Length: 342
Image (cartoon, rainbow, N blue to C red; front, side, top):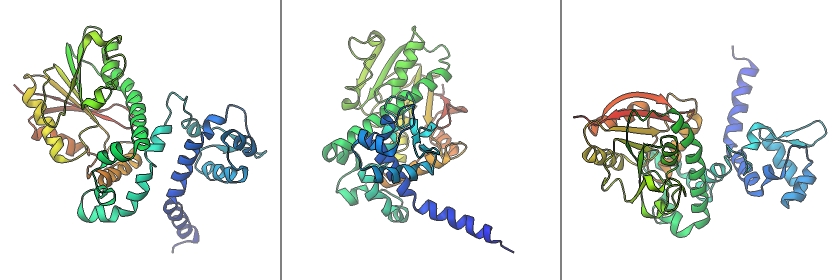
């Protein structure tokens, strides 16, 4: 016989989940208002915080009460609010800050796209151009400069944080030249060059991306004399020869671009060169709630997909790579080792 609690608890949980937009919106509002930055180490009332962030006290208290239900801020016995481990991550000055990640995942376009997930599932592809009349990145850079800024800050934050983990984990195995392919601003490359002073590196990405590369890599920077910056599109050509290639979080847009990127590397690389692919996975990871959500967001905006362990191995093998060990970098990333055959 089913008990009342067995019926009530799933129903309560489902009600909470379908109101997930309220939690996401509250996190976004807290980040935009700067509530976490306004709250220091001492407890503060909603009235005190409202004066700091220029908000209405009663409405701010209601928002903080909702966030506290999820462990984001906490209300003490005197009705004052204090930080939690999660709320501190919304501070701009926290070394592990997720403020811009939180903003990026709740940008205005996301609220337009999520209701069309059923349509994306039906057709198995993105719906972004149906909404805005142009492709995702075209809209971002041509029509939504504030959203593009948030995207760039979010990617920079994420890249800087993961770059340290990659550099700590990675054994270059005697490589003298490394290439960061589609490496954005080159944070991974910069960390590796700092750790390995005898190594030379190349950063390859789109012209507008490498123009804003890590200052350490640009002319006058501390690593500039050991860095080549190559503007280009790895899906079109691979004008780089190296002992070791690193490809991080760029093989998720669509199968065709993944296939072309990997084959371009195999064609350009010398036999025995190592190719390291670093990706979020939707299986075999403690971050599945996050990565499966990002997987659905990719489906909506560009028609892409996060990989499983096996799908990544299959794509790499199909491109002609000999895949070896797969190991975690951190809770969100896995590293796939491979070599170009003789």
